[in-house]
Image 1: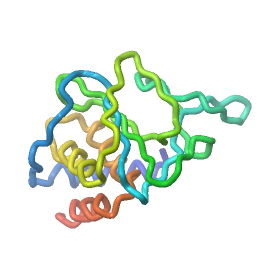
Image 2: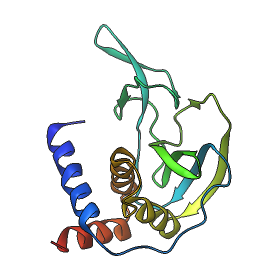
Image 3: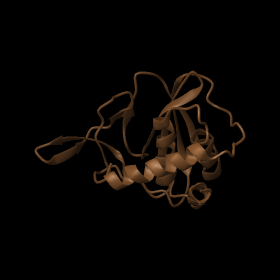
Amino acid sequence: MTRSRRLSLAVLVYFAAVSGQAVADLPSPSHDAWHTWQVDEANATNAMCCFNWRDGKSSRSGCALDGHNMSFTNSGDCAAEPGHLQVYARISGGKPVEIRVLSSNCPVSAKSEIVDLELVSADDNLNWFRNIIEDRQLQKQTREDALFALVMSESDAAYAYLDRLLSRR
């Protein structure tokens, strides 16, 4: 992640942290596991996947969701048709603790079950992430991941929400 992108995310997290507006509670997954869904958003384009690097060349390896040293790139052969963004969220104790946004063509694996919630509307996706972003009790990294996921969705509604967050100051 570039320095400017990190700075932008930090600014967004700050504004999310100081915002006081709460979002109604949305149903959360009922058990601890990785949960995945595809976002129904025509503008979403994503080629993000995990790769191995050797001698300056990348090869697709797929993502081990539980791994700590993942190399992401969006310049490989995982690109999906527009509108096929895949979200992965690890739930522990009823709360999200890790979020990954990948191409729907990126192979993944996990040590635990991956619960497929199938296709989710862009509005439901936005509401789920708003709930995370505005929950000051969640870890900062989880909230940053949620902000990043909203940007990756390329939804007009997501951008409008982020604009409202920024304009509150």
